[in-house]
Image 1 (cartoon, rainbow, N blue to C red):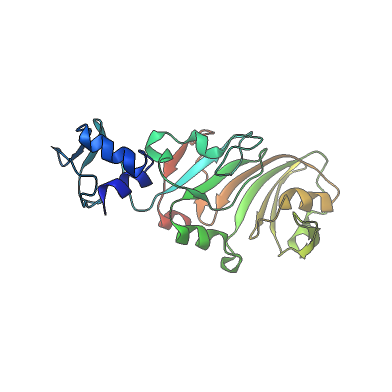
Image 2: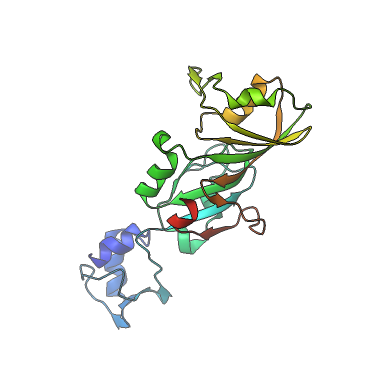
Amino acid sequence: MRLDKFLANLKYGSRSDIKKFCKKNMIKVNGVSVKNADTVINPDADLIEVDGEVVFYKEHITLMMNKPAGYICSTVDEKYPSLLNLLDRKYSRFDFKFAGRLDVDTLGLVILSTDGEVIHKITSPNKDMYKTYYVKTKCKIENEMLLESPIKLLDGNNSEYITKGAKVAKISDFELYLSITEGKFHQVKRMLEYIDNEVVLLKRIKIGNLSLPSDLEEGKYKEISLNDVF
């Protein structure tokens, strides 16, 4: 890969910027200053430095994050800040996508990846991958077993759809675990409304085989492998 393309992809600047950096002896490859921005490099083998900073690079990166409230699963800031703002400089240079989103007030496990195949495997409806949520309700939970059968709800476009049967494990009169394979707009909240209740706290705690670690603080993240999820 050309050096200028490699560094531009990692948001070190435009290709013209990289050319200027080379002229100023700001870029080294394997300890040697590089004058030509079109120098061909091996990102997996060569040590690249920009103004003394070693360039971190991996072809594919997948992260798990403990999402706090007040952030949105979006690549841009909107009414609320993007969850990507919590990534440090090492990772913020990469283009992450979300493998399943959470509402702004929902907490818990989010998977981010630069690998489109990973995103597809997790989010594809055909994969039937369960996502488990801890749910705390406003009212005493009754008739929760109704959620284990398909029910009719509205999606984000107010179109009707039929849910797949969920898995329900009641914890207390006001708490339960709910596992679903879909991820429609406000689905968990609307499922609880279906049994005349209201969600006051919602936290995703598991995706596939991957559980949210108890020691991963809100807003923190770590790299994972595909074997952790599937």
